[in-house]
Amino acid sequence: MNPFSAFSQRISDTINGLGYAVAGYAAIAILCAAGIGFVAAAVFMLVAEALGPIAAAAIFGFVFLLAAAIWAAVLAARARAEKRRRREAAASTATVATSVTLANTALRLVSRGGGRSILPLAAVALVGWFLLRESDD
Image 1 (spheres, rainbow, N blue to C red):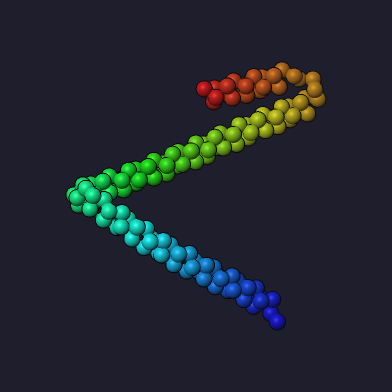
Image 2 (cartoon, one colour):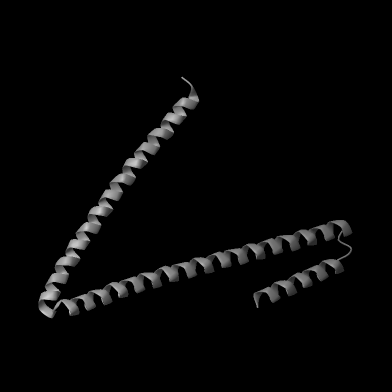
């Protein structure tokens, strides 16, 4: 048996299984949407009987708009949090890269100077500290 055919058969079986799972979840979602629609219609009829059809339509419209606004606010807050997390991760990566570069430069200066020339090392450390301090502001 060809090992590639066994591998492709396994992939095919997995894709078929995923297709059935997706179809099942889609059917469940459609049934849930229909159920929610019927419940909303029943509640609308109750409210329309008690308050009249115009008032019921106004109340339902306001409730649906309020739900959409809350959902949009939640999604916007999540997007802002994700953007802030990515920006903080990028800043952290840049700080680590700068620190590694400065440490590498310092080690090269010490190894070339044989430990005799500490003044260039101090200058590099001072410049690095200044640059890192300025990027924090």
